[in-house]
Structure formats: C-alpha cells, structure tokens
Length: 169
Picture (cartoon, one colour):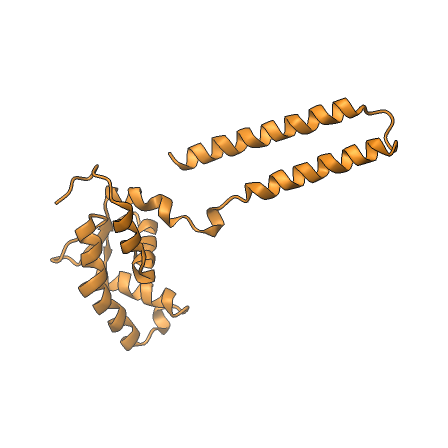
C-alpha cells in the first residue's frame, strides 16, 4: 500500500497514462466535484470516444466501455491510488494523489510558445535597428532603442519565469 504523500514514480505515471481511456476517465473525474457513478462515467467516456452524446450511444458502446472500465482501468487507477471506487454504491472519484500526475496531463492548449515571443521581439528590435541605421528615424537614438529592446527581453523573461513557477505550484 502507499500513503497519499508518497510520490508516484514516473514509470507508473507513464504506464497509467498510456491508455487514452484512462486519460479520458481522469479528465472526466477532474471535471466532477463529487463522486460519479461508474455507469455514468462509462457513458460519458463512451460518448467522448465516439464523438457523440450520451443519448445517441448504442447499448453495445455503453457496455463495452463499462466492462473495460470496471475490469481493467478503474482497478489499475485504484491500485496506483489515483482513484477510489466504492463497489457498493458504484461511485468513483479522484484522490488527492491524482494531483501528482497533473503536470503529465497538460495538453498543447496549456503550452506557451515562449520561443515565438522571443523571436518576434528579436525581429522587431532588428527591424528598428535597421530603420535607424538607414537614417529613417532621426529623432530616436539607437542607444534608446537598444535599451528598450533589452528591457522588453527582461520583462518577457520575468513573465515567463513567474508563470512557469506558478504552474509548478
């Protein structure tokens, strides 16, 4: 057995998250604030997998996902301590231990393309220096432009640092 503050090994996390159905199950449970009935969970997983609504699911699709969750996926998640399952009520819910896998669940929508911001800033700075060197802007000194570009890089780096630190908790 394990304690709630015991860290889950990276190999275990990767094994658990190797199944799209388990990832979907965790995602649905993360959206719920209260325990969810296994039958309801299975219907929601099946609907998402089939890109349809719960009402439009066939009984075969419902049963296939339910059996898979009941026999394979929920027991695996329970064994790792990410999920609890009350077999009497049929309720399933995430444990506090599920928080430790959160960094592995971040999808592309949570990825910030910092390299693009730096590239744009460098391109704008380069264009400004080119314009100044061609004598197109006489009123602004190249030293001032240089200072502003460096300041912009420092601010961007500070924002990146703070946001990434907040994401890590």
